[in-house]
Image (cartoon, rainbow over all chains, first blue to last red; front, top):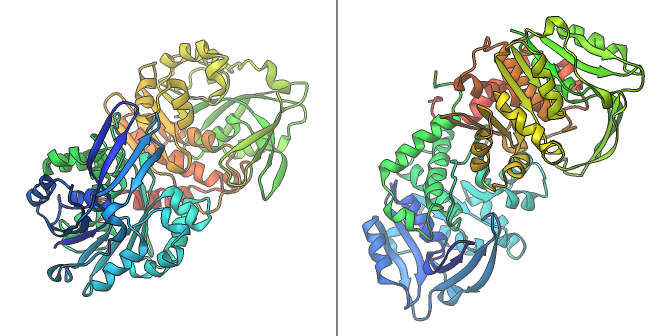
Length: 305
Length: 305
């Protein structure tokens, strides 16, 4: 089953204490689509400018990502630049130039509108709602969000939440959104705002999943060397949605969601091993499956005897 | 198999944003012994003053904790007072009066020296070493430590580490001790300092376990209401050591250590539900086993189908 991915496509300039790379492929939809593509065919929707490298369209084609929903329009591609602190845990945005993204209103090609699985990568909630408006009865909607939308567009976000099956956000955002200090209370409170399921990402500490009757907690894959954390959350969301649409065959229950979270974590753990999407470009399904097995070995405590 | 527990015994005054309780049973050995006692007979070593309530000796007796190693000496019992911030994540020590604990040099009763399992609850590393000196070939030594000992008594701590089978410390301490930002690197670096196994406690995010060839990660039990975090780490250490000595029958391999970490987390999760050791006073084995099963349900992602 295919998954529709809508979000930002950018050219990022990222500086860590060790390296700096300029105008590399970035944006929430780029990471999410690549992550999802390991499990399911992807229909990608976004916008780029005249300066966007044609080679990235070839990358998408090679990964079975249908980029016919990516419009190339006059002007420059969205650019973001950020710098990470010494521990790679905090980052500062150095500059943002929305460029062609400023007027982006996602228009779905006709043949994309029947896609059953939707991943609304991180963009303004009003744009995310605009995507759902164009869909014909999607069976499962995943939305990624961030703190940027909590204040300025809070009404939009609250209108969106009941239309979402799985909302993904990070721990500090979950606390901020609910004013709860306990992540358990925060996750449950967000569920009451509409989404059937809520996934809370905790970076190096893994993720939590809240459902109507169930709760799931998983660690993060242990990495000694992180090169570029950019896009980890987007790749996670892509892996989750891709797994559900593809490998799980579109069947979404709590057991499948648990596995989807692990696959999302596996994808994100690979992504941070190199700058931009470079690690995803060379990643293989065997590597993913091996790491999934490692994940099992490091987190199960009963089955192994 | 019994477990020897040595550490501090105190009367704590604890203030949270909601409640304040005065002169309640506290100290690393009190929590650790109570935690361990759910799985194994405990031999307790510590010191109290003339003002220490006789009723606590009765509590120990009821829990099969042999307190013949607890000396009652002239003077006042060790007192600690702390106040928690609004989110219960940070605390400030309001006052410390070492009293009879100031001159504490643990002396093991003759019949305690052959105990095979040892839990050195959090006290000065020199005192922890002094306990090992008196033991006859203990088969497994667990030591809990904290940042307090990193600067003032660092040589003592480094001398102790090769004599320890399992070192337990928390995440910020692991980072501080190794100057590593990655907990994975930190855990591995501490193993190279001597202990065969290292457990890193991460509070609400669970715990990590590092062994010669293996790694294990578990979440924390999800609690909505925490009343008093005091002693959570000590209770965790007690549960780990007690499980290994008792339920695991003294067999220590990585599979048993995984389970021990879960039981330690379960014990700690109960402990924080009430002030002082109050929740442990009413806790039953059935409650522990039920929560262990819940832990399995919330963290396994493959066995449940």
